[in-house]
Length: 517
Image (spheres, rainbow, N blue to C red):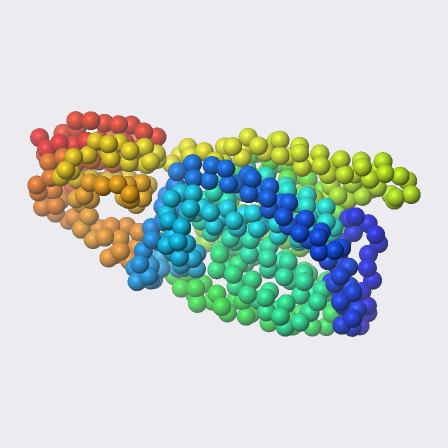
């Protein structure tokens, strides 16, 4: 077995997994750690703080959208009702909903508090990119990659969203870092931690498990360098991680119909850089520079390419069967792109720094180049970050609708819903701390149905007996009649026995007051 030889003293030199005797691996691990512990703290903290600075301001300003309403609804259920829900739908989000249930018990369910865990996961992800880049290449490579990640507009967008995508990114990065450490310093503990990180990645989002394809390349590199146990240890750790998540995956395969609405077209593919990164400019810059960075990544090029490219390619090719080609499902690929960009930029900066004997000028020039890349990209990305904090333009303005209802309701009023934008759940959230009109058409609650949807009265005349004033909340607000698509019996009864006395048109939602004629 050959001993590991540290790379040359180059600011951009890649770190290799160590082989050889225990003492040799320990010395090589110190080299792979790239300097004193202070550099690790720097590589982690600076990107994490910048990510927090982007994500935390305005954390609760943007109103929740339909998927976040689902998070609130599921996470606010009793444990019994949550069990009924995941038995029918969203079993793949069970760990996330359970964790959010505990969080809501402690922190409450305001928009800001619902998003604090995701904001924290985003900051940790930026820091982990710094550590991964430091271990693969050098401290400033990790710093640059983490800082670029922190100012990607979509990172802010999903760092301010109560959904598990930021956690999928964080655990995919953690698994990568732990694998690098396990290959540097093999042992039961490092490989066990890696197996747990694999399981956590699967629990956060199944698509993120595709990062394992890139991990396999690291194991191939280790075997080429004489590590005889890397393949066996990797296989055992992955099998352990998969076995932990297998029950959830098995049950979730029977619930795949819940995302059958996601029909992918060629336009979705051409728009992918924009939707993944938050704007065309930032997406084109990162992907373009990332492709160039493949030439600088050297032995890690296959890992980063597989991490960045393989998941979107696979999900697009299987879109008609699995319906998983959604940019938010692929947020975890952004770190691979920023690592590629950082590898290319710092490699170029290293070319500008041929050695200390030539004086400080070239070193300063290289540092200026790295700083300029971060500053320039932040300047280009800033408008996208600001847009990411705004209400989604295609989502109904339920917050304003709830304000209209709360301000104008009277005792004995009822409320009915129409449309396909989760109106009942959204209004339940927006009116959760205020007295709301009775949901007069609901015969079976979502909890009783073990899902997100209620069952409405089969005999609406009976349910509307004694109700003389109704609030209609309809997402059919594009010029069509607001009762379009409603149950025929209910729509006919409302049109016959009630008349509209007030109509308020909001963004993609209409609020109408109906009084019995």
